[in-house]
Length: 82
Image (cartoon, rainbow, N blue to C red; front, side, top):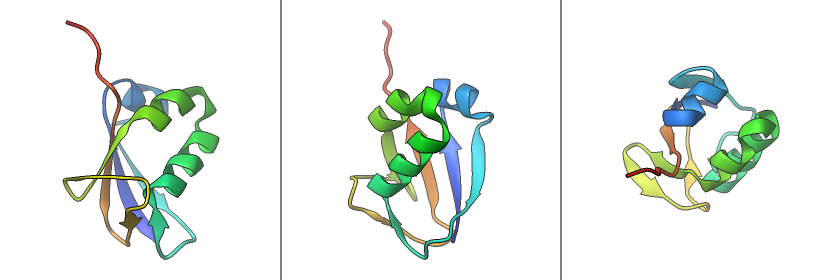
């Protein structure tokens, strides 16, 4: 399964760019499993990945949402500042 992952703020810097094209062996994957995979692959960013809001095809989702082939997934880390 192919998905495009969009990254913002510190996640984009830590993970090497504003977007990643991912090829996964699964045919479907829930958001929680994707977060787990990304946390393992990018351990230095695990905290930010686990606290990020996940948007699939421009809709905010929860951990049980099923990601499908060619979905666009965005990780939006928590914002801080004033």
